[in-house]
Image 1: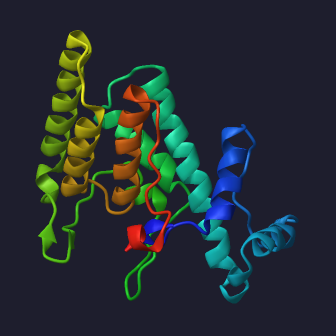
Image 2 (image 1 turned 60 degrees about the vertical axis):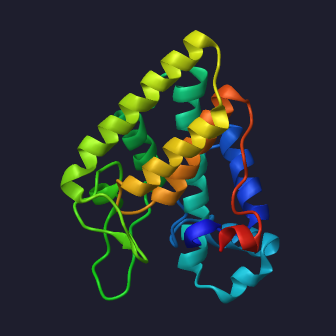
Length: 215
């Protein structure tokens, strides 16, 4: 729901439950026999979607599904299997997140998922007065971030002392300041934060449930 991705909370919860239960939820195209039925189910759960183009609604559905799959992948690797949060794992997770979701902006050509999914950006981006890492320095910054996190966790686990909220906040903030990808950095940042909290505290912090949080 943050960053104009996905749909409403009720639909999000319903789709995530299906993904986590192992149900296969693919892309619904106009020629698909399930097309109209799927739209009606989404309209029933969120009536205001009836005023939106069908393409917008189905894209939102797909964004939710891919977000859930990406987070499931990250949690399995980092929490269940206790793997390090490496560049490769971050890239794999981002590729899943963006699968089938092109970047669409006014007045410029669309960017396909294959072009930017799991790929460090080669364009300069910023937000307001904030400038993120220059593209040529992104690989270096990401490697340093991942190496520092891995080392910090080794020391903390050895000493059996860790402040997971401080660690999660520090590295999710560093990630978003690097802004390694052309799109999806905010969603990835929150997944990184929650993966750390899930591994060391066993909790997931919902962010963006209210209008105030989203603004």
